[in-house]
Length: 199
Image (tube, rainbow, N blue to C red; front, top):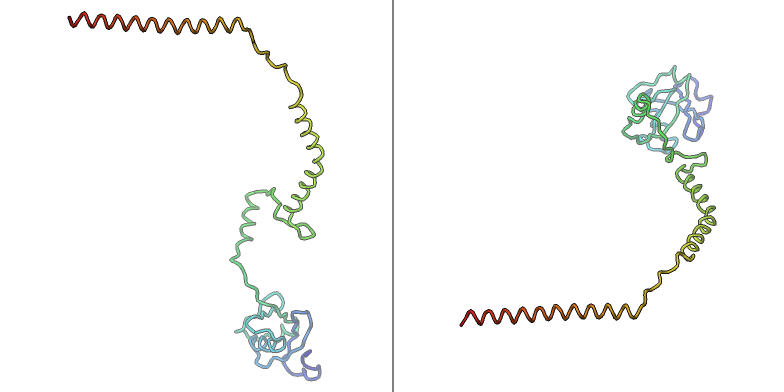
């Protein structure tokens, strides 16, 4: 319903009400209070009255306040929805950081004109660069593998002299025999010495 017909508005308190879809409606306010206008707007739109917010000019209209007829004649009443707000204080934080001169260099959380985060756009660009360098990386990998299999210094030749090996084995056997002879003579001397002490 567009509101009241124009001929029925003469001599009555009426308000120009701009609803959520920007349609203008002329409504009669019978009680003369903002709460009456809110109830009438609720009946017209079907939105519960506690969810509606009425603004005239740059200020919200309070339910307890009487309607200012002069203001209603000059400015339309905009019908808005109440939005749950946060704790606030973000503006104060921005102002204080501006005074400190802190400049940010991390814009990854910002969005571009398409609505995508710059972090994701930059990651895609880095991925494209990495994929473009795949051929270069493969070439370096092949060069490294080729350099590892390339002939290095010649292998050390094994010293193989049978006469030297025989001489070394004879020296080892001679050392073993000398240790065994010395041990046997030491044991005989110790046994002979202990027999002389007991007699």
